Length: 172
Image 1 (cartoon, rainbow, N blue to C red):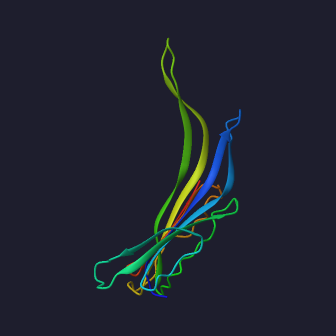
Image 2 (spheres, helix red, strand yellow):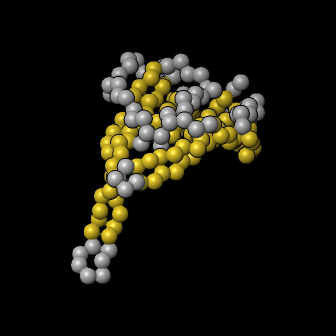
Image 3 (cartoon, rainbow, N blue to C red):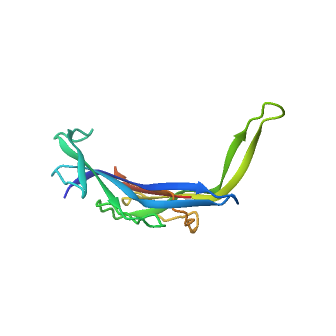
């Protein structure tokens, strides 16, 4: 298997509602996984094939095939752990961390009186990105380990190209 470039995007199939106390209730109906592989040997990812094409990448003389598939994973409250087929033996670095609290608001408009923005709910969120370099760095370093929030929203993006495997998790 000679994979040149690979991309996996995991997106939740969700719905949410806010009750009278302002609490957010999320319902997860499954996860959509879109997987794209660019390779010399026509490697096809699992799932329903939705795109197949011949591509040229700078630095390579012969054309490659690119195939994209979609599949649905069952419901779960956690983001599924998705791994790339591309194998990189290198140094893993926590390259980006963002944590915070998202506030839900709506605008109250009045004919008489002042208009206002009303807050009615808040939920924690986090974005965690790691990069694995193919022996391109000498020493490992991290931002420090943080536990991601367990909210069932967000997803995962995994990209492998140019000797770098990037994995971004979004929750909340």
